[in-house]
Image (cartoon, rainbow, N blue to C red; front, side):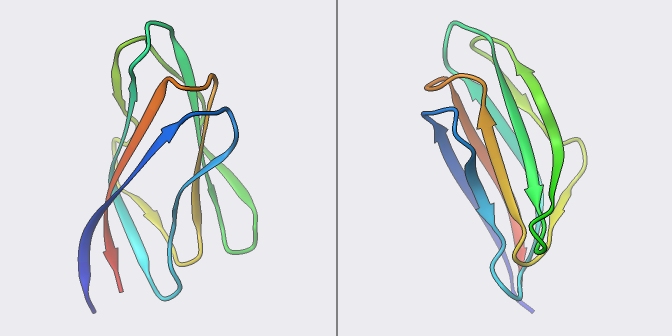
Length: 107
């Protein structure tokens, strides 16, 4: 079993649902941190969901406020993402939010 620390980064340039991470087959991941940075002078919101292997969507954060020119840590506890599950993010407005997720991928 191999363990690799990794990160993913997304610049939310639109208000479309955007994939942050998809766990590969035969891999589980433990997210230790999901940071949202708002680099604009206006408040915004972020929605974070996890889609399981049966395509069911579960809300982790629904319209979480992110104040202007701030950074928010979304996780207070680790978040396990099982094989073939997908983390998706959606911004309330375009060109304001940047997301960085740090995780341990286990094979």
